[in-house]
Length: 624
Image (cartoon, rainbow, N blue to C red):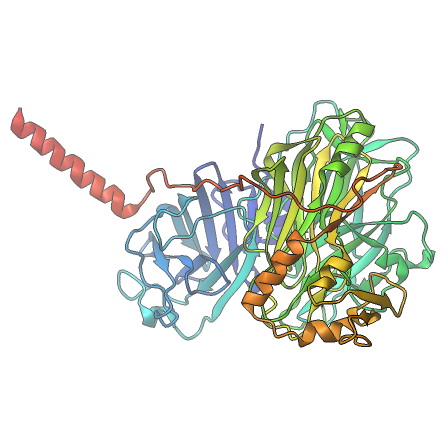
């Protein structure tokens, strides 16, 4: 049974606003000072929004493909003379910042009120796009834009003069996962729970527009196996708009080099991060603003207290501080719930995609679209499943992860040379908005299946090659999948062999001038042959090549089809065969079905239907 979760603690944070008309499973503050708050819920066909704005004028919210008004699907409403109004509008390139009315009003007003300086509007629409000027609501990351006006329209509708009023300049954008599932939130009967919290220790947030804080924790020592069943955000009251997202990284070692680093805060992605932090780079949970609690399925739990359970973790918190305040103190974080009453299955996480490497993950400059591919070879899955006498696993959630160049990500699923429906996809990826997604339906991965992560990068503003690595200016192409039953596999990656990749540039022989590491660069590689390139560094040759979109497409296809090296990391001995492979040619690529409206709820359509029914009644009466 799915039930609506309403975070009472968060409601108290917005007590100055109007109380929502009902309990909503999702909520996000959009504007500084919590002056615009959005609540929402959805089913298979429709989504209901309730928008609260601190104004006695108009308030607007929109769904944007890029964070701006152009091509956005915009809804603007107000309460005038006690009557609530909502309008469906569109952002046009030539509208000079003013969104004109959409020809069809594919929106239904449900309720609205104005009190204590706040305007509240409740409305719904269909999830698919009902016409070309509408935007479909998908599971992708959505840029939500908002605006406030100081006064109601002077007439029956807002005009340009109303929209550009002086005195209330409140506009902005916020990324959200609108169609986010909460999973099954009804706990099994009879379970008892304990909790622990990972909090930021009253951190004073630096005076930076964007700040990434990393804090190292040790999990509680347990004398027996337990199951982690829930992870929920703990956001300090008043800091809802500053705490943007939280990531939890499992550390690769169960021993610290320096125990004094525990419970210390460090700026993430900097060269001076302690080694104990750098060894923590496997994501196993993510939360972002607007998101809720992550529930493991009732029949599975993440094991704690076992030999291979996480002992140390790093929590990364992304803070927004656009006003560069110096007085923000924060003790936000995550609360983990666990139980000694074991569920039927052990859940786990597998890291999929392209190996994180500065030598094999190569992204050329000056490309609006460049695809990287990382494969989880079927042999890796087959052998680790066989070790547990399993013929399948069930994936119930995923977390997509790339860095600043990432624009789209897809986790593909293959059975032989046929492609099955995507496991996960985000065509509007935002590095600054990352969150684990729970699927409404579990996905079965059978022994012999394979998976592939595809990342689409925009490197138009880069002058040099971008390579794989841990820093935000480097790149990753990874998907973390949550699944059960647990198999002895934690990484299933691939990369083009270096010989294949460098062969594109005519390099036939090379050597390293420094010890290869994840912190290395292409400058570490000295070309030996052919003679005309001998003595040059690899990065010099690669960057000197003139790069445009056509050449980038050619290079992407070359790397995709080049010989691949599997990276199958397990906690059992594994004789991985083959030692290299070519990605399978897919004869039947998957094409997502197009979602269509089932007859949009529209104000104009309803009026037209009423007129048609009246005319039909008159016609019948005249005949009989």
